[in-house]
Length: 251
Image (cartoon, rainbow, N blue to C red; front, side, top):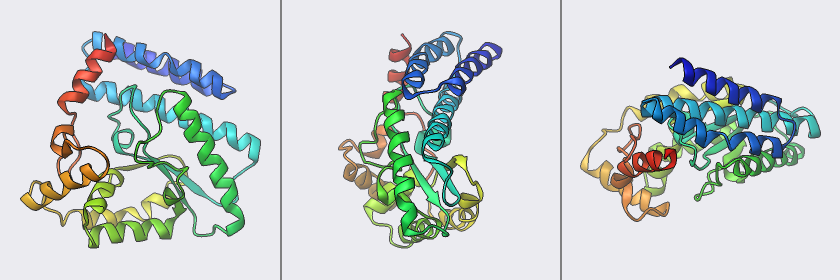
């Protein structure tokens, strides 16, 4: 996959040199062409997902850098996290956003505006680059997903211990997390207990499948989890619809 690496490196290098949202949006227009090239070369979904997600990561980091150059350094440590398909490196060029901010417990009330400004800028910038706003508003610009590490820990404890349909839907998104930029320890410090508790769930059980389908309906997907390829608490696979979209977009 040497050509894939060169193409991905070229695009991410262009992104790193961009000095505005407009320049990033222009660079991102090359992404469908990269995806088409990979498919024509016979790349499988894993290779395509890795390539597209690498570009999304580069766009996210560059947007953060551009905004920090304008508003100054962060008042306290933070981690910009991605979830869902980006975290699993399974994106296509038409994926929506799933992201958030984990902020150090050192955060003070006067720091809130800085993080809100950053989140809105990055979410707006990603949307301008073709990664549309999350229909469920699972983005850092939503205050619910822009919280301190202790609040995040409370979220996961509640979702695990009180597995309501909405909790199942949210955990299916946020149990796949990855730090794109910032302090990785803010996630890794909280990650072990989440993973340990996750193993208590029995994938594929009748109750888990039923509740997960109900959760997908609550998110606005009336066809349920099975049509989208979601497997209880396991890692989602590519559904038939997503595979068809990939090939259609590549053509």
